[in-house]
Image 1 (cartoon, rainbow, N blue to C red):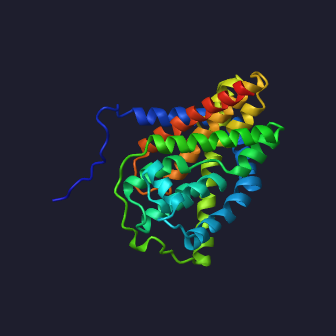
Image 2 (image 1 turned 60 degrees about the horizontal axis):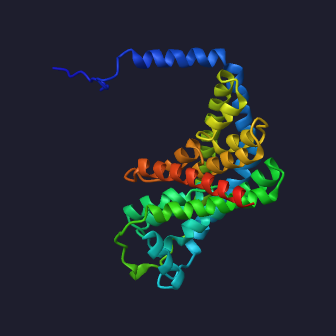
Image 3 (image 1 turned 90 degrees about the vertical axis):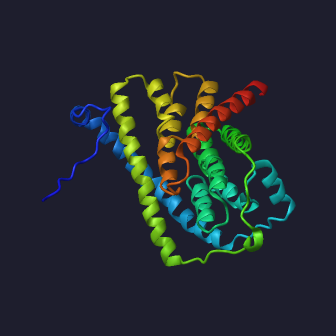
Length: 311
């Protein structure tokens, strides 16, 4: 007697829905092939000129940081951190790394703390939602000076990112049990060969997300002819393309562009979130993370609006 393997499917979805969707996407790719190709070329150029030279060394640095940093969890700064965020003080390094080095360094280091038994599952869920932020160099130099022509705007945007991240962390803080601090200063060993290999794989993986969403944005721009609408939609998809498009959108006054860019920086885009998910363990809530990032985007834009009003 032989058994026949049956592939499971969702009964609520019509059996032809998947086939029709694939057919529609294939036709779309053929009709708008040039726009998708141009978007992918743009993403490839951005990855080779900016992402790889920036992320690769920082991935190695994050491994070195994880093996060398020392946090006195009985000190005043660590205790203040624990009271504000209800997270073990050893996680201060993740917050600082996330704000200075940029995504996905904060999430990567937070996951390492969890894997090494330094923080609990609940602490990681509360931590990952506010440590995944754009880097200081990207916001101040790239966005402020490079795209907006003003380092002052870049500094203001970066301050808004910092404040919004900390506020979200405090808003979602709740009483948690800390892991015993008996081995709080134990460090993981640093293996340069392993770190270089891991950095290469992680960098290429992140570039693949950026290239995919660059092609998707190219497709959207070919369907939606409005540059301003495409720029706003991009803010939910991929941050580098979004801030570049919004900054160049003359249909909006400068104040509106700054508010939209602030939201894009705070939310960071679906591409960044998928990158973060690749580092997070399966048991960590993705929905809570997305809720925290969406709230950070809203708060960041409100803070930017406040800065513009008091200017």
